[in-house]
Image (spheres, rainbow, N blue to C red):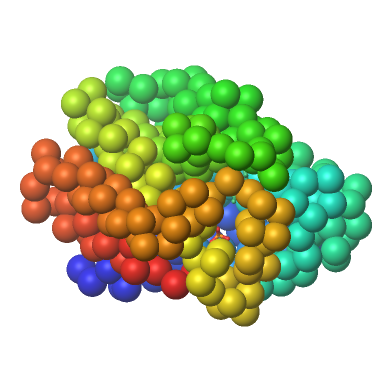
Length: 293
Ligand code: GRG
């Protein structure tokens, strides 16, 4: 199957499931449910839930069994974006091509919409079917770990504390692991776990997720410098404006592009055990290196 067709079908499945699982916009109190839906249906790339479905399939499982996990990860990701955009964090006006949640609903509701999506993630994941090797509690622990204070939140803390501060390559790599690679890897692992992946396949996909997540963030840093706000759907040039620690700031654009290519190569290499079955994940990986937003 062509990557474009696969993405179209997978995104449609995820969107339909999110629409089914999230409370309707009219559910009382309507403001919070409108705000949750506003951000979750704002046109994100759906990379993480697509990776969950693709990881399940490469391990011989079905997208169907991975759907609750896929939606849970997208809820966590969207919550992190809403909170990241708040005035007390990055203070951004634009996200996914639209005014940010706090611009539309006010700061209080934006905080609560993030909180509600975070909580919703675990309500969904708790209903995910267990596999022989991985019970539902293992899935819940996986997502809680990746989105907790050791990883996703750690990334945000270090990002906040690092603004305007000099950094080292190792420190920057850890920020990228925490704020991006951990949740992306978790998305992939949850898919594999839903398919009852063998420990060695789970391990290979964990290496894939780690390298892909780092490549994704290096490219995100590059795009912040090279693309326009219109193209990105979020404010371009923001990292340099707040002197955030980024790859282009530390290594320059040329070396950052080489690093992204090296990490992409590493991600592709980790798919070797899957042979021909990995064709789709390979083209998805290649397409992320070439992405423009
Ligand atoms: C827990 C508040 C909180 C934040 C967590 C730093 C951070 C982590 C979030 C800020 C946004 C950011 C730069 C995250 C890093 C990962 C990343 C590149 C997110 C954007 O992901 P895309 O491009 O977004 O997949 P879409 O909108 O397409 O889903």
